Image (tube, rainbow, N blue to C red; front, side, top):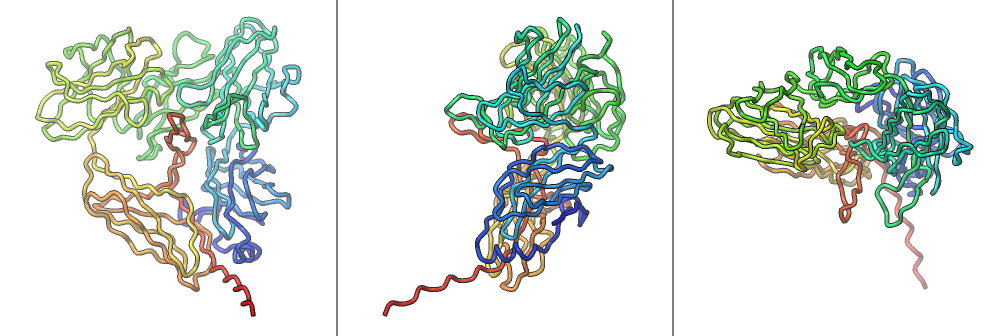
Length: 575
């Protein structure tokens, strides 16, 4: 059984066959099957131009199932062994993360990740629990696919370092939606622990940086705890606890200066990082001409560097603060839109910037620091030129502040940024963005897949969040419905935020499996409703979801149409 990632009506419609196979229809019609559950693939990352047999992890009753891939260049073929999937990655397949679904005639799973890379991918080799069994990694940089497959599991890797050589070890598990809060621990040739890290400052994934004092064999341990956290504290492991480990000793960029880039132009930035072999920060051009207009982040590759940067993107120029700027008279004037990179240093420092506004103009100001992996817990305030506070925020949807504000009159106003914890230092960096607040909206659904039985209806709840003062009527419609399925467009009143779309399948509607899209439009504006993969749920203060993933959401929703199930025979009446 084969499924190729071919284009059919845009990126959200790639890689699909609408008709299901005969066995799946038969099993589904008898009610013997349930939609598959896809937890992960292992290994999760594959180099383009290669072929692999990987394990699909989850519940698949019956086997085989089929798969849909968002994006071109991947061919998936199931094997006769349950969970086995042969994957061919085309030489020209675009690199980066993909979402993949498993589906049968009964429905589809939530999408999970596969990652396409340009670099060769290695894998861990068991047994490697003891330091004496540590797997030797001789070629750096290296990407290794691993898995903590049982409780108490510890994976160990050995790297030869020269005196003065710096190792950067980075691990991805949390951003892959792996149920793993991972940690890294490094031992020197004597067996002495010299470094430990449990998160990179941005997510629960760890990053460890160490400069060797003496040459020799250094051992890196990978272990972790359950996420979401439970009541017991122990090293966790299961077939779902997959990870990617990156080991590098070459030039490695941590962030650019300024911290962001302007889309549509070539930005000249300095790179802060490790193994730069110079006291002066290297200056490199980052050509953001092809960055999408709605992209908030960009991951440019730097030739000759061991990693890929991840940088925020803005519509205006990226500036740098000029100290001193604590007083209004010293404040740098910001154009709108723009962004400025600053540092809270020394302790007690407050940075101020000015801009000119007209009465009733709406603005949105945002600070990025925690989102970039820095320890600054920032506050943000709007002031008048006499120092009077007109608005303030210290936490928005994350630890970083954001502020929507409307100018009360024509004039000059001041933005102030400081540390909520009154800390200062070279690592207390931030990026402050300034933009006019354009009315907008965001549409979301609560599920990534829907099943509809012929002759019946299914309700799809749609939530619209109005942003920056958006008002006006909106219309929601389902795009890409198959033959025999209808859904009447629904109008949302000027301030309404929730509605329900009713899907109806005729009694003779043929079986179907494929992607659909919900378009929400109004006033020359259209957005697709998305299913959020990243969440911010908590249970008694314990984080339950994944706030940052390689892909945070998808507008490719899945529809399965199944025939009506036969009525069960009535028991014979007793005479």
